[in-house]
Length: 141
Image (cartoon, rainbow, N blue to C red):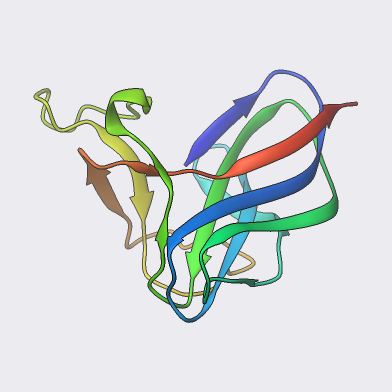
């Protein structure tokens, strides 16, 4: 999922809420955007957060410094947990693929890890579905 920063900030914690456990782990990462505004190199990522139980899964003590610009938030899971999501009505549409009601809200590709370079092909648009919710604690720098 892309996001834009207009000020420099430091992310100190990221979290998800597992609502249905699924054996495995989840990693949360941030990719830089290339000149074509596509995800490119992995800047930061968490270690695998356990999804074998429900509840808040949080990585703390981070010092992810980001300058103003475009970035891509990524979530990779090795299992099949259910993660709390943002309802479609509250999600910002990223594209109107059919100029109809099927708004693209995020893209996904297969894999259970976050590679150091984002894939350049193989993405599928997710239309009309809730967006995985990732919480971030940050401070302006």
